[in-house]
Length: 255
Image (cartoon, rainbow, N blue to C red; front, side, top):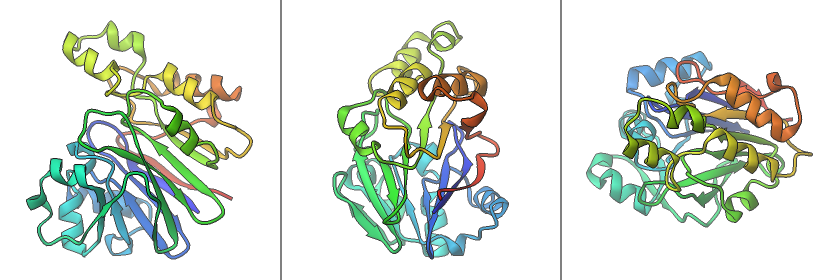
């Protein structure tokens, strides 16, 4: 099993997960040409994508999904709430699979295990991807952790974890007060300290990869995110990966 990122942040998101003969794309917030360019960087063509899995309806996650799916006849997996909030007509001509936010489902060689998260969206979910042996957890776009989130991530072998902002940088920065409150609120995004606490609550014996994701360009830095997650694992900060907006990150194998 392996995974890589097309890019992560408020300007667009996409994560590729591969197991056996199956390749899934988690979200697509980029236009067609840009998506093709970013896939090519990973030696992938759109025709190799077996499904697009959507976390929620915000444009940096769903903006490019329908066009990519329609152009290359790729099925899409999303919750009913996400479909309604994104707009049914957006997906005209696309093969849709409406998923239960609490029920695992197989997509060829990959098992999808969705779980609901607190975020300012209609029915947002995040996912654990499994191949029957190893698993990858992805958690972004949530304002807080929950017992259910931690239970879902308790046995993963790799984790992509939101470190959206440093709370001091956000609160002392130039954003208007209402936006600061939304970002830092229960339905907003994880700050470095909360991500550190969440990671520290998880068993660490199986963890082969930890990657900080969805970093704010204005309110965080890769160094701060790495330091926060390294504290949770008591490891060298250089071991922590970072998913960048422009480059994402290259293939990582789960052995």
